[in-house]
Length: 169
Image 1 (tube, rainbow, N blue to C red):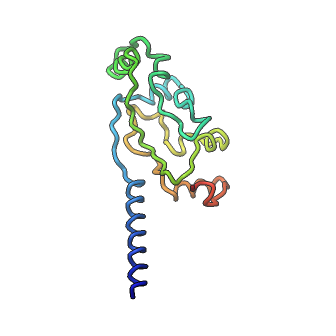
Image 2 (cartoon, one colour; image 1 turned 45 degrees about the vertical axis):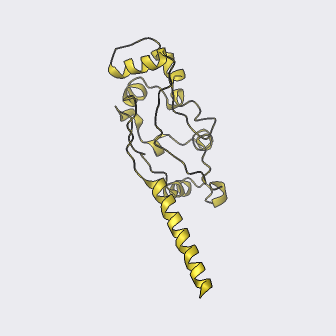
Image 3 (cartoon, helix red, strand yellow; image 1 turned 90 degrees about the vertical axis):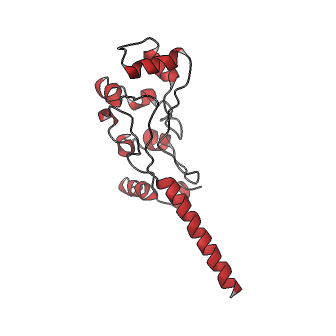
């Protein structure tokens, strides 16, 4: 009887832990950015490629959220004096980092690399992030939720390994 209770306690603990991890990974919190960045203007109208601003996308795990080092290339002087441009100019001219919030969080037990997916795999950013050229304000939630099923479906579609050890630590 004691062994059954111990096994039951272990099973309940594992189920509770799985629920906590699952709800932390799958929650859809809306994020409000400090500046209403207009992707439609930058990536759409001016046709600035994703990699021009998200510079680490071809080299590393994270694509990087651009900051004043990147924004300052164009915004070191005020341009049209829209509220967003003035905010960017203030951050750049004061040498203050823009406190952007990331909306994509890959769990610690997952090995993910933008370099492998975009650089080597030649996947279009739109597959996971949507058509950013249409967004006049920053996204508040993930376009494609980081869920194992979404990753699995893409791996199957593109004939990439589904061996657990390739993606999980």
